[in-house]
Length: 337
Image (tube, rainbow, N blue to C red):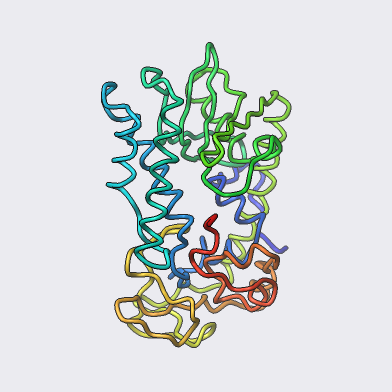
C-alpha cells in the first residue's frame, strides 16, 4: 500500500476509534467504509426489531439504577421498559405489543436478582485509554466494584446462548477493562456477560498477558484501518456541497438529496429507506443515497467479506456480493418466536 510515512522523529497521529469501529474493519471492510468513510453515508435498510428490543432493555436497565433506592423495584423496571419502548422493525402493533410484554418480564425478572443498594461504579459509563498507536473509547453497560477490583458487565438479549469463549474472546470487553482500570486507577480483569433470556452469567477473568494481547490486536487492526483511511482520503474527492449519489447506485450525483442524520448502528423513526432496493420511493422516507464514487483501488482495498451475516447487514442493498452470499431477511426475523 502506497501510504506516506511520517517523517523521522515526528509522532504519528493516534487512530481514534471505538471497539465497534475496529470490529467493523475486522468483519467486513466494505461495511466499514460505508459506516465510517462515505459521506453522505449510504442509505440503510429499515430498523431491526431485535435491535429495538435490545435498546429498550438496555435503556430501562440504565434508568433503573438512576432511580432513587426506594424505587428500584421490578415494577419500576417494567414501567421503564413500557415508557421507553422502541416500536421500529416489528411486523405490526400486535407483534410489538407481544415483545413489549416479554421485555418487561425479562427486565423485571433480572432486576429481582439484584441488590438495589449495591450502586454500580458506573452505568452507561464512557471509558477511554490510549497507547502510542490508538486512542480508544467506548461505553460500558455497567461497571461494578467487587472487593478491591472492578468488573465490566455487559447485558445481552439475543436468542443465542452464550459461552465462556464469548467473554474471553471479546475485544470490546477487554478494552473496556483496560480503560476502566486506567481511568479509575483500580484493577479490572473480570468481564461478565449477563444473558437476560436465560438468566445466565458468563464470566471470564483476564490476566495481564491476555489483556495485553487484546490491546496489541486492537493496535494491529487500528494500524490497518488507519492506513486504509488515509488512502481513501487521498483518492476519493469529497462530494460537492449539497450533492449525494443518486438512486441509480454507484457513480451518479443527485442534487438536493440528503443523507440520513443517524450515525452507524442507529435509525431514525420514519426516516429509514425501504429494503426493496434502489429506485423505490416510500412516502415519509428520505431520498435514497447510494455509495460514494470510488476508484477501483478503493473498491478492492475495502472489499466485502461475504457470508451468512450479510443477511443482517444494514448496507445489504449496496452489496451484490452480500446479496448473493446470504438470503434476505425481514426486520423481525431475528426475534426468538
